[in-house]
Amino acid sequence: MARTALLLSLILMCCPLRAQPLAVETYVDGLEHPWSMVFLPDGRALVTERPGRLRVITADGRLVEAPVTGTPEVYADSQGGLMGLALHPEYAENGWIYMTLAHGGPKANATRIVRGRLVDGRWTDTEVLFTAQPWKDTPVHYGGRMAFLSDGTLLVSVGDGFDYREHAQRLDSHLGKMIRIHDDGRVPADNPFVERKEALPEIFSLGHRNPQGLVVEPAEGRIWSHEHGPRGGDELNLIRAGGNYGWPIVTRGVDYSGARVSPFTDRPGMIAPKLGWTPSIAPAGMSRYTGSRFPDWRGDLLVASLVEKTLRRIRLDGDEIVGDQPLGLQLDRRLRDVRVGPDGALYVLTDENQGEILRITY
Image (cartoon, rainbow, N blue to C red):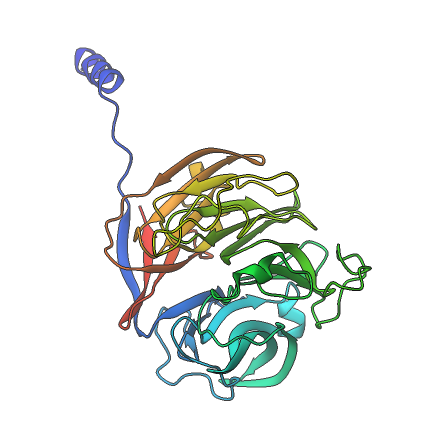
């Protein structure tokens, strides 16, 4: 017996066990282009479908057949529709649910933020908190991710509208910006450009293309965001109040025609990304792992991608990136978002006509 144990120990030292493989199962199907998901304190979950529906998932993982009634009308075309979801930090007391959506029509549309409550399967108490200026006539690049900061204010990404990319550098436009508001839509008095007459007061940072990942580390105050580049030049940024992230003056990507967007990959006064992806992975959602099911991942970022069709684990050491690797799930589906469930598992939304929520565990 002793010789057998010794032999086994030597084998393990020479040939260590491979990492435990990940298991992927369908948690919910029957969704059309699911975009964002939140878990409620009672065990249920909510998920948005881009065409304009808010759906309820029961605590035992069943999709309620009928969508929530009374939700705001959306402009559903191309990339536009019903997008982000977030719960108020004091949701258990006040019931506020926040959504981002495309508002308007083909000739004039914008990213909008609303909040409301869910009562007996119906959306009620709708309040419009913010509508991006100016109107645009493109159905793409809305941004639409939200995160509450530790002071209770709400940070929201707004895309550049694609054909309006020069607006990302203009302080009289919300396009290509991170905006920050109070939970009721008021403008915080300490926003970085609030004292500048030519600037829209909601602006928190500028020079963004289409940011669709947003994570806040509440204890440390760090804000992580990723955004789509054109052909290449996807970025992971550490967001600072008043920071300029360069687009379209600075980029590591080229236009879809192959033409150069800019000759510059860095410029004085513009903040470089902490990480870039070329060729593009099309990052579309992001979470920070805080569960217990994958203890080695605690504090790491998880990024869902549309083009690469996988999850990437971004290992952090404070504000430095020390690792970036795909999890190798071979899902062959466009991934719109990744959420960490109360059970510590990962819940991944597939951006498909026959969309699903996948549950990932060991």
